[in-house]
Image (cartoon, rainbow, N blue to C red):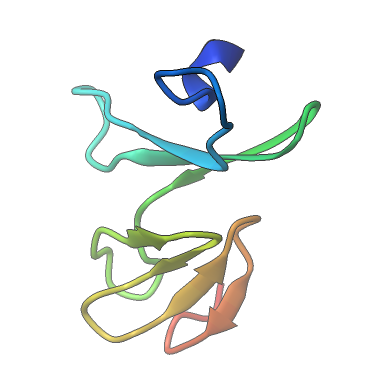
Length: 82
C-alpha cells in the first residue's frame, strides 16, 4: 500500500486507516496508520465465530455478538477472547 493512499483526494488531510480487499482472501484487511512509521494490518475476521468485522474509527466490532477489538488487534470486549 503506498503511503499516498492514506492522504485524502485533495491532499489536505490524512486518513487513520484503510480497508483493503483482495480476491485471494476471504476477509478484508484493515490497515491502521498510528504515526508516520508505525502501521498495523488486521484481518477483519472475528476470532469468536468468524464473522466479518466492521471498522468504527479506531476499533473493529463484530456485528454478530458485539466483540470489540482495538486497532492493534487486542480484544476490548467479548465474547471473543483472542
